[in-house]
Image (cartoon, rainbow, N blue to C red; front, top):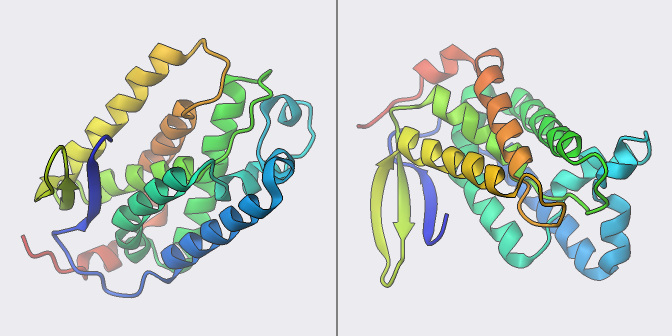
Length: 221
């Protein structure tokens, strides 16, 4: 979102550790380093290519592709957003359920992208679909919380913004930008994956979260 960087929830303190979020970040980093070493051959092998998926080939890439990234800016941006929203949702769900939610959300997001462009041979990769699911869960779990952000059009400005406003605006960008490029069969941002992941998070978060853990989380508005 331009020069806007989310830093985390300013409205509550976590009850426990963010062990799973940190593990996911570590795995993404490890896989990206493997990509740098393996080059295009590694990317073609482990990324999700829709034309292969719809014919029932390389289905494992629906899973492996969510840990891959196209560039340093891609992985850094994704991991910043994961760290901004992941720990609180992990706290609300518990470690095991959060891990399952994250992986399932990523799979749904990637399937959405594949179904939107079933004949494409452009590799699909990235954690943003799974992270979109986390953001969807956040907006329905903590809609009144405020997010610490840094904005730097020319100088660094730090302030808090309502989570519902920030995430809602992000989602609208995905919808409008997808509408602008829906007929373009080239590489780029996987808007459908973002939308599918986000909607998955909104719809299923109540099934995964533990109300007792949320009630025990002390806000400090």
